[in-house]
Length: 158
Image (cartoon, rainbow, N blue to C red):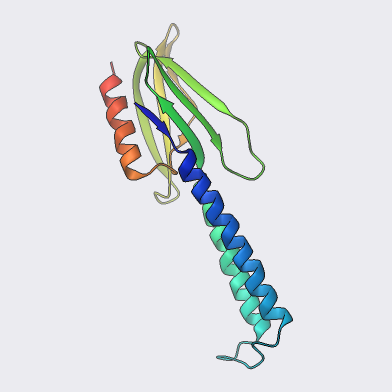
């Protein structure tokens, strides 16, 4: 089985880009033009601009805290391959985990940040004992993709 969430990540990035454009255009029109001069519920156009900017910043911080990763998973052949890298603006380090199917012994799921962030930790047996690989954020995976991933990993456990 193969999981590649490139399209999902592209959609998330496109959504963030479009939202940024809408935000800039809306706030610019609000502040530059005379469309909204009166007060509504005691709020001026400057108050509205600050509220809209705050909502936008909170949305971006929320998405940053979720730590979306691009993920490619494959169990073809005699190895399990998991490639991933964070989708943050300044982090582009690409990582890869490759485990022989005979060495794979299990996995662990950790939920963080009130269940908004999920991390997968793969485990393999080595000559020195049990090895745990670094956690990989699987937050960007759709529910069906997570279920398929867990089914494959459960089947491969030795």
